[in-house]
Image 1 (spheres, rainbow, N blue to C red):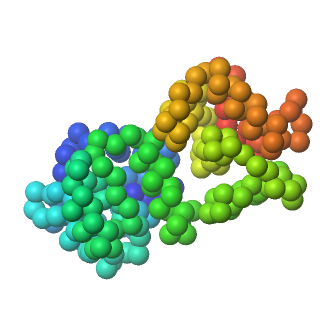
Image 2 (image 1 turned 90 degrees about the vertical axis):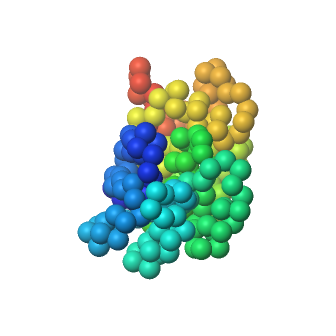
Length: 223
């Protein structure tokens, strides 16, 4: 389980983020002050940090520097809307990414997983059941032959690969695809996308092995 270090003084935001990330199989350690950071870094090893730029006893830039000195992990800044100068400063200070409040939960989760993948904390290649997915290049192969997926089909496949132990509801898939494309995806079109994806990656449509249907609940990765 990946360990997330959350430095955020707004307790409501921190609580909601902790619930969201826990539902995604992340473990979250939260502190609300810059002065609490050093002790936690000594106590525990983290995989990624989420850092609010504005803290009551300092700023997130100093926290980022402190984290980078102690642990070589990605840092994603949480910034106020329209604060472009802070974003530039944060990235120049060694931050790996930023996300603007208020943010969409799925976008934040996607940013976290991307940062972990880039840092080598999560595998960039998925292989199973004759399916090969290189998440760095976007190349997909089935039994050695390249498979060409649409942007939405590829995003749908990544949702399953990045959540291998989870049953994923249709509502969540609709949210993921909406966030990724900005297009209006309905229940009916979701069914079509899943069918199209299965046609390209399954050996037998009648007995899918990669994307399994969990009746009454949703879908899950089967390999």
